[in-house]
Figure 1 (tube, rainbow, N blue to C red):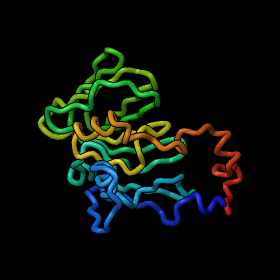
Figure 2 (figure 1 turned 60 degrees about the vertical axis):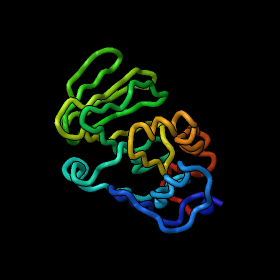
Figure 3 (figure 1 turned 90 degrees about the horizontal axis):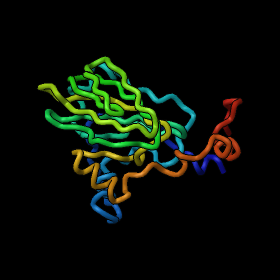
Length: 200
């Protein structure tokens, strides 16, 4: 039973858009957009290593989308973001914890009304329920990867622009899956997490 829940292949991540030529069922424009990243898991991940090389050195030349989910787990999610020159992430409050690592560019973080300049190499933590905003103040894109705990976005999310992301969030399309928001006890009871580290 557990095998039918878990994906059969290891999710791979490409930091450039993946264009699918496979015909898809027509749901909405957003659903078709998600089809651009069909290799991302939509069910709980396998218990295997997930490796992202050169996250702090090669991102500026490989990143272009405003938001791209790289991996979604039972208790966390890794997302790559590129804030264009003069752009911002948007003033918001999440119900999940968020840690942001900046890899390129400069910006201004506003957390709970306090400002802090940020640059490549900086780490910023935003506790759940805390107002935050990040603005690109430099001459180049502000690039970062962020870890949400638990997940905040749909596993296959790719947003080319902030406006696209805002629209899908407002329409309830870009939502974290139920399996990424379950309590630990429920995952353990379902056999998705075993302290033995052994799975059939």
